[in-house]
Picture 1 (cartoon, rainbow, N blue to C red):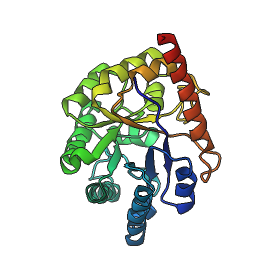
Picture 2 (picture 1 turned 45 degrees about the horizontal axis):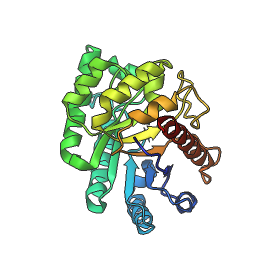
Picture 3 (picture 1 turned 30 degrees about the vertical axis):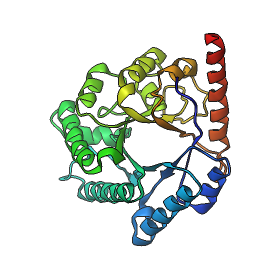
Picture 4 (picture 1 turned 45 degrees about the vertical axis):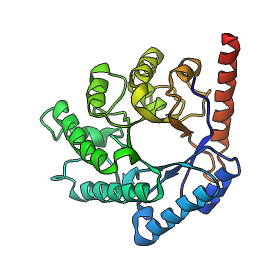
Length: 279
């Protein structure tokens, strides 16, 4: 069975990194933004990665920037209509892959986000199927470039969402290395725990990294584990034990990862209960 591991998330800020490192995590995931891709920002990000590695953390993930100015980094965005956003995603993915190869770390790219903007972008294609194919075509290129250093995360959108067997089969046919965000799937399924468990079971062999996040199943709320409606006793046995994970939880204070730590304590409690039932 999957053993809960302390995976923490923060930026390249030394204050945030030091707050996380004092808890001796197994995994550190960097949240990146536009500032990390200026010449100075890129050097500082590389230095921050090596600082975390020097502390003995070998599992490091670089999360592709969520936003470009007012836009989410939607890979479905057509180049014709969003040339600047399209180039930003291309250039930053290339830069992260370079860091992944040079420093032996992982890169995470979102297959999509959510909301009215992505729906507008999808509507620029003749059909939803065409929009999905455009996403797959782009992710195929990224997968060839990043090889075993890149993974793709599920969205809450008509493109690249988990929870629908037919779409999951399409995704699996591309042989991507997958990141699975539990809350995104749960929200996509409007709070259906059985659907979430079915998706976890179906995709587990392809998943290399989890975002363990609770939710009420309606909006993107990023709750501490145990405060939402996800059935964690059902989830835990279905996670790929070879995958890494982090707790991607909304924090009251970005310099204090208390909610991530509380999530880890909760999941360890669930794990102990499950082991007790087996005995």
